[in-house]
Length: 227
Ligand code: TYD
Image (cartoon, rainbow, N blue to C red):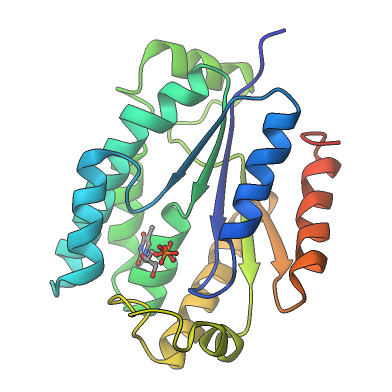
C-alpha cells in the first residue's frame, strides 16, 4: 500500500513544551512502520539553518526579518518537506508559517497583508515537483499553496511559559521578549486558528506532561493516524 504523506506542524509560544511531544510522536509513527522526517523552522536545511542563526540573533528591520524567514521556508519546502511528502512520509515540523503570523505579525506588529502575500509566494505548489503535486492531488485538495494537514498548537499562558523558561539557557532574540510580547503572540495563534479551524488542534499545555501527551495522542488517534 502506498502511504499518503502527512505534514504536521507544531506551534506555541517559547516554553510551551513542544519538543518532547514531537519526538514521542515520531517514535509512535515509526512504530507503525512509517518513515518520519523531523524538522524545524526557521531551519531544516543547511541554507535555512544559516538563515536561522541570523534571524534569531541579529537585529534587523521587520521586512528583512520576514523575507529571511520566508526565504528559509521556501528552501525547506523545496528541498526537504515536499520531497518527503512525495515519498509518502510523515513530516513533523517544529513551527511553520503560523509562527510568522504570531511572532512577526501579532508579536512585532508587522503588516499581516504583506505576510499573506509572502505566504502565497513561498508556499506556492508550483516548482515543488510533479510527484509532490500528484501526491497533493490524491488528497483531493486543489490547493494552490502548501499548508500543514494538521497544526498542533500548544497553548500555555505566557506567565507560565516565562516561569518554565527562567534560567533555562541564554535566551535568543525572541525568548528575551517580555511577557506582553508573548501575550500578543498567543493572540496571533488564536487568530490564525479562527481563520482555519479545521487545520488546528489546540492543546491545553498548562498541565502535567503526561496529561498533555494523552491529549496529543488522542488527536492523532481520532484522525486515524495512530492507534
Ligand atoms: P524554537 O522553535 O522555540 O526553537 P528552540 O526550541 O530551539 O528555541 O525557536 C525558534 C524561535 O523563532 C522562536 O522564538 C520563534 C521564532 N520564530 C519566529 O519568530 N518566526 C517564525 O516564522 C518562526 C518559524 C520562528
